[in-house]
Length: 411
Image (cartoon, rainbow, N blue to C red; front, side, top):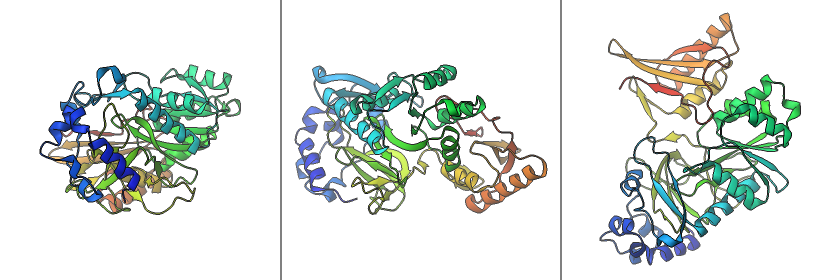
């Protein structure tokens, strides 16, 4: 992606005092004179920031402003190690709200909407981000938080919520409950803003059909503000990224070489305005591509494609490398398979056994045909043959947060 003159000017402005303000970057860029960064090519020579760098800075080593300027902290979940603590200034909070409000506007949400927010509140950036953007836009926020499905559905009816914000897993759970309880004619939802985990086309279509809504993918990560740095539009041709706040690159995950627009690699983000904890060339581990050309919606903001997966969620079975997105593609192509699936990997007598459980309304011979078809498509697309097992609709677990789909018991 070509760096604009405005982006380069903002980066150079940050660099004038970055090492003086931030012990983290004083150490990171030791021996590098940031005044020498005058072009995009110069910028691309700078070292990457990694999640482990941020963990090593725990608790507040990333802070680049005096204490009196910090108004809030947020944190990654820390489920896979030391959490990452991100300090925010008042301007950071305003900037995040501004970006999130843009997301709502891109999705056609207006101050007349009533926005039911089901992601969690707390140290992480989920619920409070959705609320910030909602209030900035001027819409009515209904800050439910996760869980208590009975109450969610009651408030949805009584307050006539028009927008649902959720993880895809919880949106599906709500959609199924609405269908099961025959509430479709009693709810007023028209839009859904869905984020935090990747999901397939069949799942999207089920949620849209069962709730009668149009869905938008929202993108973000705790280290870079949180959700709200990008969203899909009515064209549903990728997610627009707010490039006046974020500069993005896509690099080869192995070599770190910057890839041309259109090629799939690892997304690397740089904050252009962030004060509390600026991030320079941060490796997200998300796999995607920058979509060349102008979006059919007419927006000038650049786009990334739907995430393929993460560099750290690749599975290797029987010599084949696979990502969740590829498994979802197989599910999508299998006639009779519904959206929900689980992959079980285990070692029996020294051999890897790969089982794909998937929900289907089919029974008997039709189910057997569907299982056979899924196994054949899987072999053609990914190179190895799984044991495909169809299970009744609703049998696989649903989650109020993110749904775990791959279970590898080999290690």
